[in-house]
Amino acid sequence: MARYLLKRIAILVLLLFAISLVVFSVLFALPGDPAQIILGLNATEETLANLRAELGLDQPFFIQYTRWITGLLTGHGSRSINYDMPVYELIFSRLAVTGPLALMAMFLAVIISLPLGIIAARYQNRPPDAAVMFVTQLGLATPEFWLGILLILLFAVQFGLFPAGGFAGWEVSFWGSLKGLMLPALALGLIRASILTRLTRSSMLEVLREDYIRTAWAKGLKERTVIYVHALKNALIPVLTILGLQLGQLLAGAIIIENVYYLPGLGRLVFQAIGQRDLPVIREVVLFMAAAVIVVNFLVDLAYAYIDPSFRNR
Image (tube, rainbow, N blue to C red; front, side, top):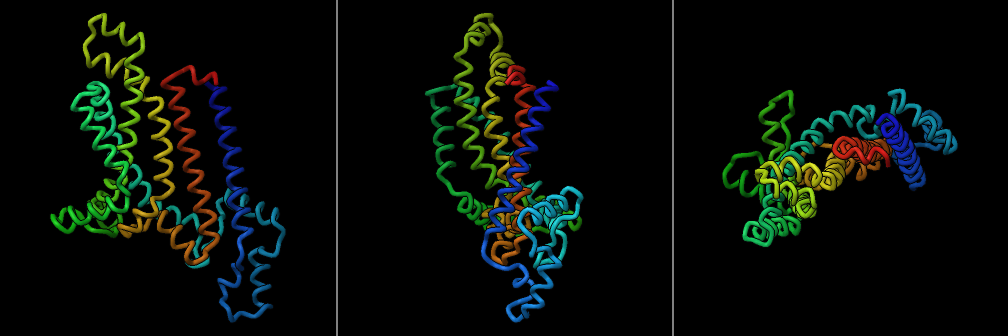
């Protein structure tokens, strides 16, 4: 297990380094002058040159990249051009919205998809299976933003159970903030539940055809024992793959949903930064999003090794 862990950590570090290099290279090559954006169009060339020197923008690519990485590793990252504050402070403040939103969405997706997938597999080609497949197909065909608008019309406008948008702030009202995240989490969770339900069904059907499951049935074991003890554990391995990818994507920021519900999360932050050409924010938020996906998949690999020890030898 120790060898497997060290191998995965080495891959994690190399991936993070490669992603940081790609992100910095792409934004470095973009046209535009950050000094001009900060000082405006009326700034003199001398003033612009002084600011470029102060920010290190007149240095070669690898010197700028080394400074940036060193700053990130030592806790001294870039400053936002528009907010005039460290980018990491912006990320942590917005993560207080995106993090709980992602976790709530995945929790809803899991508690909906696993039971439905098991039911569909257990009653294959019968009415319960057909009903689940119909609902999940409908979910897959529904755009997130459209579902988000429908939920606003139904639960906010029609019944007034939840706010239509905005975020009160955890320090202002915990319950109000939780209610503010319920509809966007439901919009994100229902779409992902459709994917996970179909995958759980397919994985369960494959496992239920295995010889050891037939042996369990032949021994007269109870249905609950066969399904939840013997079959489900092995069926979860491919489900974990998609679950990890989806959680990473959600942590990376649900840009469309955060804009539909006017939530001050990471997705909205990077959307605004692109419009304002705030390159330091774009660079570090994109790196954080990519790192979130990589780290989540690293944790999924560890979960694989726990569920199926054969993965430790790969």
